[in-house]
Length: 223
Image 1 (tube, rainbow, N blue to C red):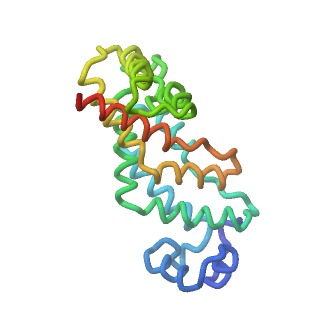
Image 2: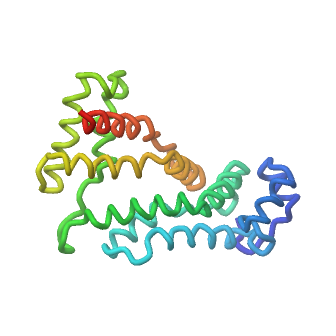
């Protein structure tokens, strides 16, 4: 997709399958303003989102790598499906609530980085939940069942070990906070659109694992 090619509203409607009325609505919202109906214009919207998420965070190159992994790269000759995904991702990036949620996740991640540049980053809580909770979800174990107790205990023990802190009520409140922030369904959608645009394999949906983990932690915190 040529960064200097300007797409008319009619051409965007044809390529995306959206109506002219919908494209005009996007234009009014600033998502596809006339001067921005180019590859470069869309990229500015998404780069603005990533700037808002990562600006001023500690961690230097570590956050730069995460940012790169969240950046869409539209091919030179995108498919119509990729163009539609590009526009949807641009709209999602303008959602202030979504921006704030991803920013909170980034801040929590930065706060959890170990001191000292030579130390490798700690494993992410979401990755630990995917590894330890995923099999329970696949097996149909209910988060309120006794069979869920050892799963929650294993997840808490992993976090306690990684973050060098006791497995207590405070740790589990922290885990619940992190997983609640990560369970926004728009996060899954962003990653799905990103994979489609970048021609990556479709990502695993994390919502079932995160919802299970949040429910299980809430139930046990109330006991």
